[in-house]
Length: 266
Image (cartoon, rainbow, N blue to C red; front, side, top):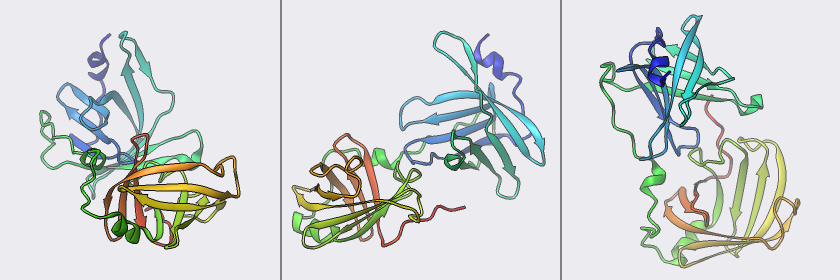
């Protein structure tokens, strides 16, 4: 049986349209199709310009606009697979949006994705353009800063925290305090709100040729933060209170300049 054959019976009571939002790490776009052409219900996750991962979905009503979502996908060999876990979905009439609750192995890692209706997408044949992600807009290896190392060093002094756009935001908290004398203090936390301290780390920093270079000189947990370890991140964008770095592995790091960590919205 083809995937479209499975999709044919997946109708739901959620109004026809396309519901969309960014993934928690802002590196992909999540889109829910309801009543879209031959796909009555489908969840798509797309990384930039790459082809999205399509999974058919079947909604079972739990009452009061609450649904249990069954995800169905097809392997390259043509086999149909069904997810073990069933995400929960709630349709909000007032906001015309879908709240998708994704379960994780640990309950504290569960995620809520607020998918908002795209105006005009109630036409079943309408396919809105995919948004360009921030990480794509900053994927040029040549930073467009126009600032000298001395200016970047002056802007670096202060306290920086992980921004919600960063891939690590939902995993833990971290505060980095850069001092004008070239020293840096780091404070790691088990939670995003930075209420449960786990480790402290100290080191030295400098900026050379637009790159932020760190060397660890002291650590409360050498296994997690080895003394002598170094990192080199290219400064891609910098503003009064925000910064985008590109790590040596190509990962984008998003930072906000503030003294306390950013508490996630409820």
